[in-house]
Length: 296
Image (cartoon, rainbow, N blue to C red):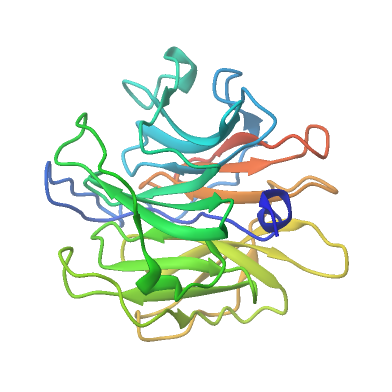
């Protein structure tokens, strides 16, 4: 199953983030806003970002100053990062940078730890329809290491859309064979993930995928395809503790478009900006959109 087929069951989004992380420690207050206004009508990002027929897999960093995403190039799907000086600036203020990592046919769905020193993504090669890889760097601005196949996570299954927790100790991903979300943990960043992932029950009768979680992993956003021939829509759910199952999910209101696939969502740490990919412009071209809301 190639990229366009697999893409129709993925996501990434949800609430604010708290905490994190190693080099350049950043703290966020998840209680800063307890009630939100409605989402604005989504708008596409600048043409410099939406520069190809396939732009998706975006993850906004907790501070909202960098957006990592994948875009189609002449050499396959590649990872890019767009940056801005402040939240008041548009991402159009500078040209996105092609993230330099050892190339393959297609790299998708970049996800970073809170310190931005470890990046996970899924990779398609002539020998594999989709596997999880990771790369690391010693400091922001330094070179990324050669990617490592994370076969201890996916047990050689077809997988995509990893979401690495901000502390780097949990990874959520999509099992493409069953269109479910799974999770695996490790004791420290120096350990490898082994043994395969555990199912994340979401209480919805649908193909699901592409998880994005809050820093405490108590809130999840995912895409779900409901009904025969249905499109992907973004949903979210919450739980009381990591040991609990998620409660009944609800579809994110106010951002959908009739007949369109909405996928690959993520939010800024304050919960005020939602980024996701959608083919609503023509039913085929995926572009990255943003919706905003205010804190009541």
